[in-house]
Length: 469
Image 1: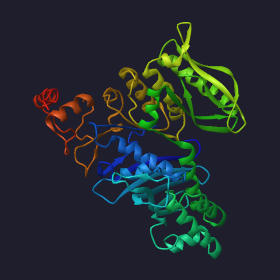
Image 2: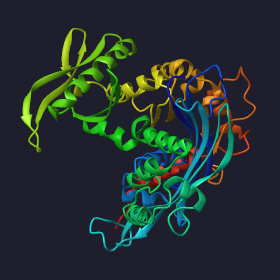
Image 3: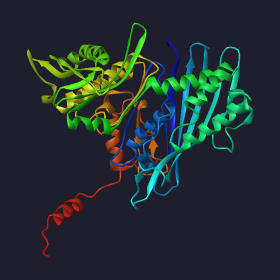
Image 4: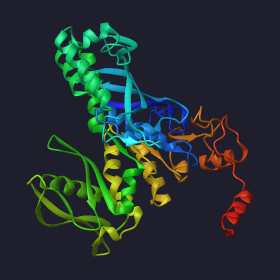
């Protein structure tokens, strides 16, 4: 592996959306593969999107951005709070050290009459989402030493952090700094942000902590959240139906890393900052190298249509994405939904293929993509890629093309929401095996709530009856 690498090894979800409890192990058990791939399958409303939403919460926390209020609605309706636990395996290149780390956090919905911008619940009360009880634990091993798993920082105790001995190692004993961080902790709570990864605490650790292993852990997780973890949820995918493509990218040129997302409106020319023009051009050029192999004869281009001032007075460039196919140039908006979906995620798939410390999570990856192509793409990434790809899908073609250890399923049991299939032989077709389990229920947990075709037909008929007033 080149450079430091952060990988999510396990995710545990408690009382989040329709998941009372679920654990997903993401460790790659096939040592011949460098990539880590997890495809999650199951019927509608069984907890697939909950996994992607949990990863979105992780992204917000590691970047210390304010959680939108609607995340409060993700707390299970029967519970007061949710708990999310993320376990990592981390390789530090600079310290030649392997970390096992665990980060857990809790979410709840809290009434907030003071915030005029707060959302309203179903009873018309204002509320906000609160992130609380963060705990960071760690252990590490290198050629000189081995440290067993222990708590490094816990925000749930009274005061600033516990245990106190670790707090003093992290930030020292300066009383003024302690007071300032207490204020920062309260601000993080009221603004729905992480305190453990807040700028104030991070700066204090970097300036005062003399344990390089602690500083490195904070730095690697912060970098991972800011530059190496990408989430494509249904909200972003839904932009395609509005003819808006989010071009997600991470590009490294001449030692400089550029990353982010640029929204391109397909219905009309889009105005983007001039300094983003070369980045978008680079992204398009790199995507075309792969795109022409995936869809023979197809490439995309970017037409520059002049300049215009942005709101901040800087110069913006008007651009329009077009497709080149069969020697013709047409606006990309006239291409199929599948082509648009491929274009929106292709750059991230390229990064996953080439870089070890990248995690990309995509909800409904199969939406609009031809099933044979989807299966081949995932086969290539799983066997030859380097990064970590997490996806949900309804299309069962990948069950026939990627290693069985890369597939998990949802169940009908909210207390054990995720499972891996057992008793799958090497010569079994996992797609057929899944269908058979739906019919016969051979696993420990039921993976499909059975439906009755007669009752469905009867319901259709009753729904269509015009009743008199």
